[in-house]
Image (cartoon, rainbow, N blue to C red; front, side, top):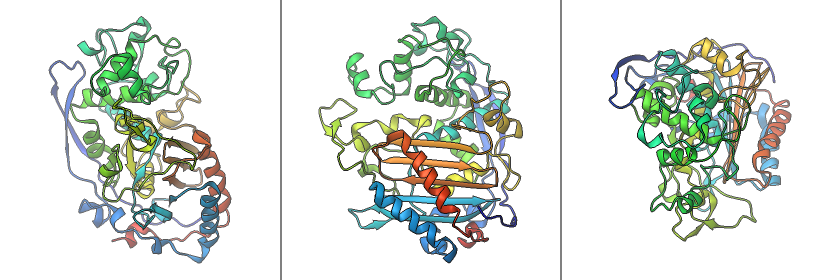
Length: 434
């Protein structure tokens, strides 16, 4: 990508946080209150999202016309209804554009202000929350999670079938080394089966899913293997709530997202009728078929709307956001001085380049010269990169691909090829959007 001069960085005020007394019946629980609000541009001081101010026309440039054409061809080739791209450089949002349809049935074109499910990119938010709690000395990565004296030492998690589970640590959950496998399927995507297996009369909530998982045997000894685990990040979601004394979504908004200038990020909802005002409609491949509803109601629904329990993903994959806001969040956890971070330099290092756990980043999929985060759900594919040359970009679709979890690789190749032709503008859309 072309190099450009740095502009004046976006200013953010760090949140002042106080820690009060232990919460009763919560061994590590703290009540955290936050003073102050996100700062930076006037729009952020007013608590308004850039999503309400960005338009496609603000990113219409001769230098990016070839990139636009490549993206349009990509969407057509893969039968993608719509997508959104945001590019940030040295603290400046230099490009933000929607392509195709946000909601074809409603006649709504994709705009940079639309929010989309971001699937497992959500894990970056959860990992950041955990590192922040470590900085505040509320927990450590070496703390045990279950069993006597563990963070989640409470009655609902006391029935542990595999005694090795009492040795699971916070750090092992972050790095997918806690021993959980999917020999009976992913617990976050087998909600209907858990209802049947456990003879439940309602949809299992977060606690009940964790309780169910503790009733199964681990696939390997914690710390002695690696297996990608959504369940691990669901448990981390619970840890954030217990250790902060706050609802997970509230904690992340007040202590991470708002300080980073992200005002329009939320936990997803299951059904189209319950979508947020500026949220897209999701689509699956042309040959997709309905499946039994996750709640075991007997209904047959699309995976994207009721076939999977998207609301149950929480910190493992449940956030919705615009790429424009999410790259702002990434800029606040990357160690680059262009944008002040919401976590310390040591926490950034622990998430990306911890020498004690080489090749096992926290929240990210891969780190090294470039940092990568991907995500897929029924109706969503996500590709995010933080590049060594200072560029951060995110591309999100509102349509599944038959390539499944491999599809972000195709997005990556397309954006790298298309961006090589681009002459990026030097402006800052955050200033232009005021």
